[in-house]
Amino acid sequence: MKKIAYAICMMLAISFVFNTTLSKAAGKKPTHYVGLHDRLLHFTEVRVIDSDMKVPLDEIAKVLYIPVEQRSNMTYIRKRGIEISYNEVTQQTIKDGVETSWAPIVNVDGKLFISVKYIAREIGFKTEYIKKLQTLRIYRDDYKHMSHADYEKKIQQLISDEKKPAVSQAKPGKKSAVNVYLTFDDGPNQFTTVNNATLKKYNAQGSFFFLGKHMKNNEDIVKAVASAGHYIGTHSMTHDKDLVYESAQAFIDEMNEGTKLILQMTGQDAKLLRVPYGSKPHVTPAMKQQLNKYNYKMWDWDVDSNDWKYTDEEADKIAKNVRTGVEKAYKSGDRDIIILLHDRSQTSKALPQIIEWLQQEGYTIKAYEPTEHIIQNFLRDTTL
Ligand SMILES: [Zn+2]
Image (cartoon, rainbow, N blue to C red; front, side, top):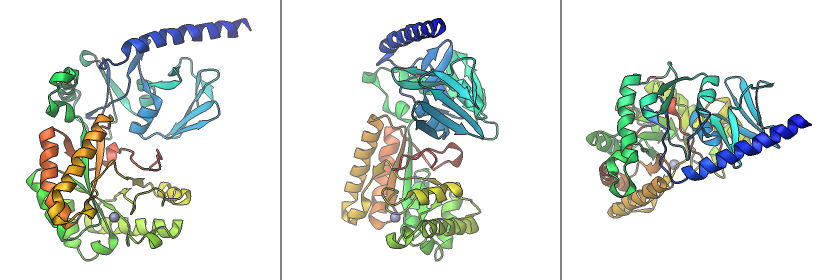
């Protein structure tokens, strides 16, 4: 009993120390950073506890694509055959059934923080600490990444941009750390060709979600988009709500067929898809299971341009919707902003001003990168 009382005292003492450092840190710019491959990650908080960097568990799980499950007092994370759990009552971290000798997971004010080094290494990443910049870089050798020396140079710039006080914030520097993904649904068609040319003109990359029924008649367009380096994923075969969502089998058949066409035409095995009309409320648990079974990822979007509502003459309104949506997402802390557009006439009219604005503001426009998957779905499912 004495041991337990002692443990409780220690916990209280430790949580007191955490609380005081936490309130001191509130509102301050981070002093320590975490990177993944060539990126600098953004967490609501990076804490150093016993010389070990810890970040919110749910946030790093999202970045590293680790499913988190909560059941009564337990939080579970599972990846690559290992299971790590945290017991709220005993405050112990358990790996594959064995209590760890230290505390890689800690509860600070009801929020779980996990050691970056620990989680990275447990799921097969390497880590490199760049002392000068107080940055812990996590990486895997089987993913393409720049050398540590080049990375240091890159993030030195990013960090110094971020440290500038809010009043003199140089927009281009800060926003270059924000990725914006232009996504185009419902092609391929003649406007895909226009959008492809516009992207080329501005040296920007995009992601296209094609319909199988249109791919069959426009193989040349599919090939042109692929060879320009854009990402192509399926958006179903028919786009018909009644057909696509008729059953889990019908749903997955539509996705598999579309993906097969992409593979045949481009040689790319495209695992990211976008379902017609958005995942919510159409994608049922049974359909989601099918997506998992075939290792698909699914994107909805952060910013809806609502382009389909407008005429060619109203292209300005589409661009305005994008500007408003991106600014709102940026202010909310989103650092990977996905914009929904379509291969339509009015959208191809709006695209040049959309790209010009994003580039002026300094955002990084990117195509989807399978090796650095971002979770964005309305189901809030971390396995997709
Ligand atoms: Zn669509």
